[in-house]
Length: 113
Image (cartoon, rainbow, N blue to C red; front, side, top):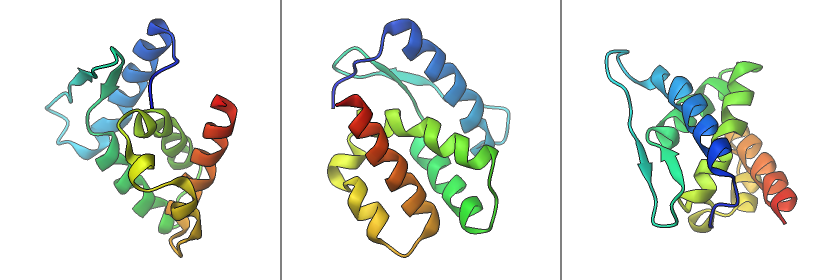
């Protein structure tokens, strides 16, 4: 999926994800952002942080974890995760955190048109 996000918005999104994705590091390392072939920038560590947050969600955490999961969705589309595992596949499973991501990915896809 190609980016339809303006560069300034991309930069803000990458900065926000960089902050969120620090939760999977020892705090000493900054995870780099990379530029994809379409020119959009994505924050590394987003998939790992999503998996970490799904585990937190499944353990009962809500609030910030939900917002962080939703924040990751545009990047997950950009890197092709939802082409490999479509949102409906996430929704249909028996994992509540995965279902949460799938529901919000489907909504994001409908908004993006």
